[in-house]
Amino acid sequence: MARVKTQQLESLIECLHQKKGEDVSLADVLSLAEITAKSLHVFFEAMDTAIYREMHEIAGYIERMRGEIGALRVDEIKQNRIPAAGHELSAIVKATEGATNTIMECAETLMAADTSDPATFQALVQDKMLVIFEACSFQDITGQRIAKVIETLQNIESRVSRFASVVGPTGVEAPAFASDEERARAERKERLLLNGPQLDGYAIDQKAVDDMFK
Image 1: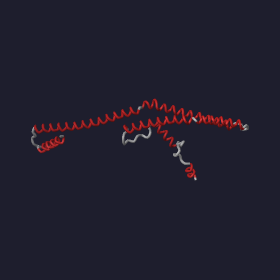
Image 2: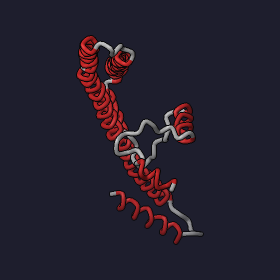
Image 3: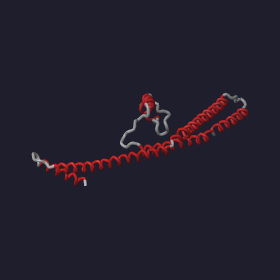
Image 4: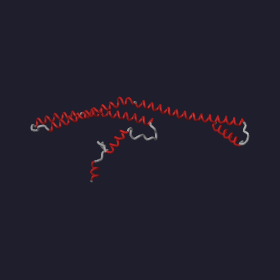
């Protein structure tokens, strides 16, 4: 319909050009005004439809984002999961420190023990070995605590990844650092080569270091 109106408008304009210098009737002018008004009406209807469609898409995007924010459950992560993980890590450090001190004290006692009486020394060694074995049992509890921390991190990672994939902008590269403080720490780490302690399989092999110096 819009095309028909446009053709009529073009025909009427061409007719007016042909009558240039001649008297144009009032009927021609009114016809031109009517066709122009109808053509503009069709144009604004199409523009309204486009705007409505864009607004509908924006509203849908906001609604999806609200849903994903709800699924992210930020309050639970901030108030429960992260503090709980922090408590578990503190307990791991405390248990490791206690076991290490116990083992070192037993070792120091054995090194300073009098070996002139074999029977007494043997009894002391057996006693301290039992204490060391008991201290090493911290690994079981520590492993369970570490499993809880890993579960928390995986839960947070899955939620954040889902949130980023659903509502994140496409084709736009996110900033490398969340803050200037984070950037400063990363630059200091790179400048001072603060990469240790290295994990197995990631560290430089000692043989490669020896070959480099050779």
